[in-house]
Image (tube, rainbow, N blue to C red; front, side, top):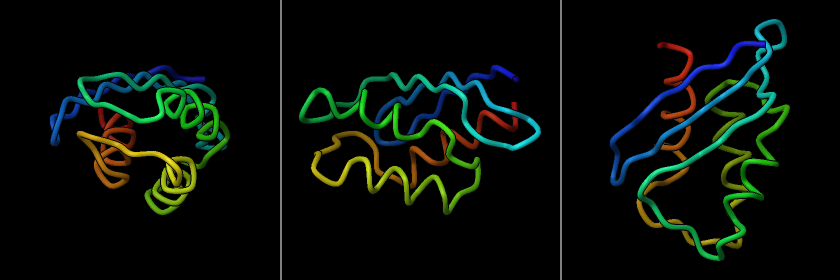
Length: 92
């Protein structure tokens, strides 16, 4: 397992703390924070839970994020910017 962090300034600030399996390239745990808003409030917990075991690949992440936030409203980020923030953890 490897633990990494990233901060992305998109529409709002997105901070990612990510622990992932380097062999399978999948998310083991993730914490998403920042100055964005999600409604309903439990959407963030749902998103973080749903991202576990997701491959760290652009299309897989975008799809999982869209599915997880289907019944939610996000203010300050979209699925593409959140994906960019997550994948940015792999660069640092």
